[in-house]
Length: 536
Image (cartoon, rainbow, N blue to C red; front, side, top):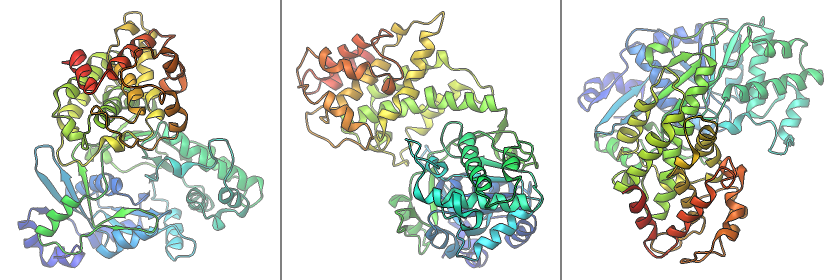
């Protein structure tokens, strides 16, 4: 029992008896159709792609709603292609971890080809040929926000990118340089239209991708290393579009517990491995059942009918509303709240926190009572229903091995958007008052308490990675448990609008946040007592 095309054919009855859903379509026929007339290529061979996008198409193939599969390309960690794709005939075991304790076992076969975006490998020429095909409608990406960067935070261009600007399309070595080389190939084949769709979890992701592509096209044209007209092609929305999207699906790295399930079923060679670039890969992926993908419907060469698989297509402004709904109210603020107080109370799993009455009440009040009144309903997803799913299905999922320590990473970069936007909306409202926000300030006070690195039992703990720790920690390091006069020590922190989105004193929340902080540091057990006082 090994994951390969021979096994799922010859041992079909055994796989199905064990509860695995197998592809119901002829993979060889689908592969032939896809190579001859591709309509979707995806960059970024990571776990979310295999559990989400590839599975959506797998379902459509099973339902005879399409006869064309997916081609995946990897431009950063080439080892993934061999260790997670080629070795298993491009098949994936997708273990859907449901909140009711059940597991859905699916063999995803929609990926028909996996390629390295490597100029030194034969795959590169195959990819160029695919980009020349007029049938190609969409190129999508899950390469993380860092993948689109052509300059650092200070506007400096890294040496590798600068070298790519000078070398031209076919000598580019950066991820985005190699992607742009493929788009240049399509330009030379007749400037055929195409949608370039970022599906990474970052705000206005289409613009980030467009800015990166445009930077390469502009520099190549200025340096005379590409044909004139390429920049105009990239900038023409009727030729190359860069839709915005919002994606949401928790897909942790392969879990030991899931691997043990597969081994118990008799599946061989399912161990996960770590590549030389520290990517954890396996023949299986594990993910939660909930998933959302909303895409701006701007496809100049047409698009696959992914709406039949649950993908939502809409206007750009609606994508923006959905993203703000998720990031500012319905999910991310609740996650951050659990991360901060989970670390302070010694929790190691988000799902365990959801058994804590005070913490559950805390996030419900922040989401439903304080956040929901200022959310703009995007229409295609009901905000209350979204929070209901988060609180009742997603966060309590015992299968999801997410930790407050992981979610607490980079909290200083998250507070402004996850809570500050709600405060601003209250401030600008005619009917709502900022002083009615009672528990968002408790989150801020909790974060300041977290920065002390001392939990509710007064034991030290390690702070999660955050680029602002060196600046923030000194602001609280002179505060002792039991202090009551903290204004002079906290004023610099709570007035920092770059952290909270607003100066807490100017909007009338500074003193309240200080009051909460004093209660949180009163003595051993004060964090629990403060939570009971305000949410119990």
